[in-house]
Image 1 (tube, one colour):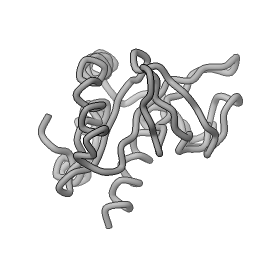
Image 2 (cartoon, one colour):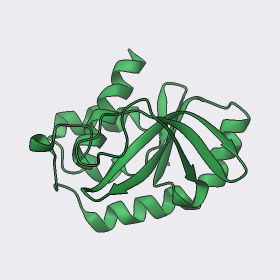
Image 3 (tube, helix red, strand yellow):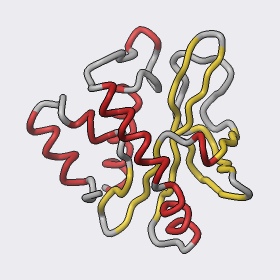
Image 4 (cartoon, one colour):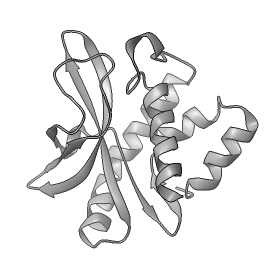
Length: 155
């Protein structure tokens, strides 16, 4: 059940950020851009905490969000199966691209710690981090928003 909930959250995030869906279904709005920027800044500010928890294995399913660009545009991807060494995360792209053509699902990728846009992990049945999801919840139908709020741990 947890994997299904996590998959639903990741799909929602991907759709809202305009990725992971075919180009004709990409969502280009519906969220407060300023709040999203604040959420990204907070995730970066707390990245050392995240790394510490990951290294101490104080949770499961650790992932980071990376911004990837090519001549077609920009997308935001979650990297799963991550490792952290010498200031860099390495992992694999967890979703199909909808805009960029320079990556594919399952492809290995590296990102500097300073370039992550978000992070999340699961502990005690809750999702920790995932700050960029929180502004998106505000624009959801009330019943759907309540479901996601229930899954998100308090920051």
